[in-house]
Amino acid sequence: MALFLDSANLQDVRRAAELGFVAGVTTNPTLVARAGLNGKQAVREILKIIDGSVFYQVTENSIDGRAAEAREVFDTAPERIHIKIPATLENFALAKRLTDEGIHCAMTAVYTAAQAYLAGQVGATYIAPYVHRITTHLGDGVGTIRDCAAVLQGTSTRIVAASLKSPDEVIAVIIAGAQDVTIPLDLILQLAEHDLSQQAIRDF
Ligand code: G3P
Image 1 (cartoon, rainbow, N blue to C red):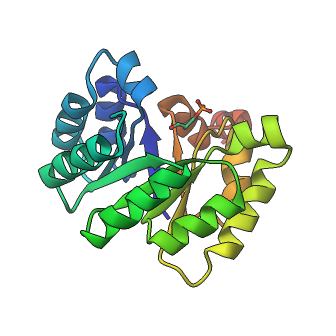
Image 2 (image 1 turned 45 degrees about the vertical axis):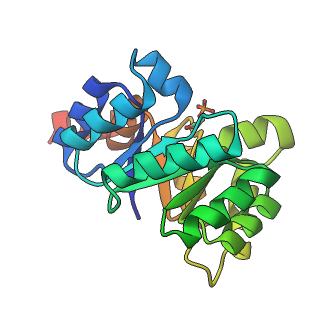
């Protein structure tokens, strides 16, 4: 059960590292751009700051370009890097090629249990379903996590639930069968706090 930071902001990564219980960092091209870095630079810096897994999303336009990009980034720290690959037909084929080479592939932008099933078939290490976005666009993000967990039973593919907006949503997806979650720093901090806890500290 791993809790990951979803950010490429190096200050956030430092804060997460200080907490000690954050198991690594997931990035995506938007988060990297927001941090004012390029993807490979971000991965290099994050690997230095925090122990654990670091997720990097491929961005090259061509399949061969994405394959080369995945190999290059994975080779910088094979025991720690997971290559995020958006869930499309050609990318499932790419993930199969890469997993056959021993590269850890995490299928991302997952919206359906059908995509989760395919991720299991290609031997992805993770799927990253976008829970809140699924609820917004398709109706039931937590229910989709439950279905993903069912179709991945018996495989080694883990669910790292992403796009989570509240502590309640985090807990709901864990109960629904997500092994891991990835969330921004502010939500990590929110998990620890409750007004009534503060009240109890004052009372006692
Ligand atoms: O890593 C991407 C995923 O976390 C999307 O999150 O909050 O943009 O829906 P959000």
